[in-house]
Length: 484
Ligand code: GLN
Image 1 (cartoon, rainbow, N blue to C red):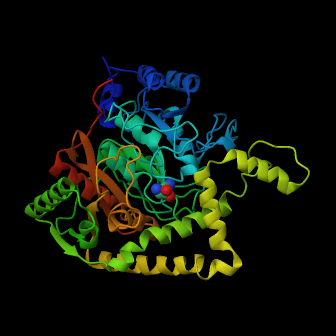
Image 2 (image 1 turned 135 degrees about the horizontal axis):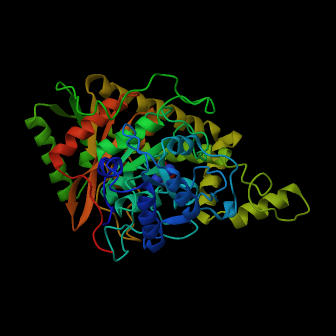
Image 3 (image 1 turned 180 degrees about the horizontal axis):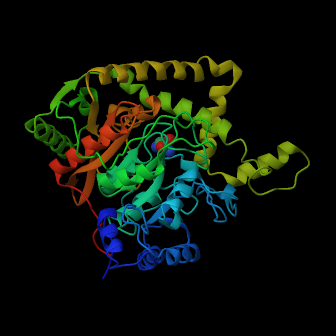
């Protein structure tokens, strides 16, 4: 019997009826992890997983995560387990504490199987820039296609069925874009709903914990376990949380959905557009109001540059502690500057250095007004435009990406609207802190592609309800990569 590819619900039923034990599930997940051909693992937690799983004896009927295996993006702090953020500068770093989300999943008795790859320090969207090299998309066994990033390992392990869910993070789209490329549900909840204590900061005004699963309800189970205030994260919300899974079927029949025309117009792939419009029709046929609305194209094409300036600036200051003294290997040198220069020169790849240079440049006194503050002001313009749409509509609904997962080296024209808008619009939800979910809507050349639903802040429950409804229309859930 194999449990590969089963959902949380299915595994829970087997666990509760004692047809399988947490230990058996952990053993199989570990075998799959060891045989992994996606280059998805930084560290396999064999000993820890077996020990913990063996300690779980009596099934908890009302706890859907009891005994369920999962993987953790390697930018979450894990006590006594090496954590690298897929960067050479953190090679050998072993944290002394667990991130709150890791602790919460431990309390829920879910079983961590391993730490998985990312684009270095979560800065990237391809899954190719981590220190172990590229992570492959399991839907293409020839290893020619990206799985996307930065949460590449989380996406690969979930799509390949090793585990039913994974922890990721999302600063611009790092959960929702790989979810589109890998046929998964990728959820970025409202900023502050989940504690980020122990998540390595990239750009904290945008950073959110992300959840990967293979169906919408499974994502809601995980959110139930993770949401809520944490004294260790002063930015975490004190609002009461909802029962996201329990109320998933209670969608408001008067729901109104907005499709942003400028995003659709920037996509050239006919299959993606046709399939997307088909889902719109299906939602309309079911009685939901769906309108095509405008956001000024100038605002849409400013998303990426604005994101890049803000995220690089924040990344620069937040990663200043990776200096070979506080964190990272110590190099002998005559001066402080010499020590830091050696650690950072050897520790970071070119891509990261480029981001830090851009960030520093934007933060320089003489450039701040023209770059950093201008980007901040434009962020406000973007957020106002989005919130204006969300005054009249409950959700914004759009294709998550302009295409299926690109092939390695398939470069897009970075000044085209397709790149600036269709490839980067998911960042809207980070700018405004909104709950945002991607789920599969179609398949082309054997590769899945997804659409995205974004709702109002703290309406995570409603976003999940809408996604659950859409999932019924597409019939695409529990997708697992074929072969191997
Ligand atoms: N792809 C985006 C970037 O490269 C988003 C990264 C993220 O969400 N962590 O910055």
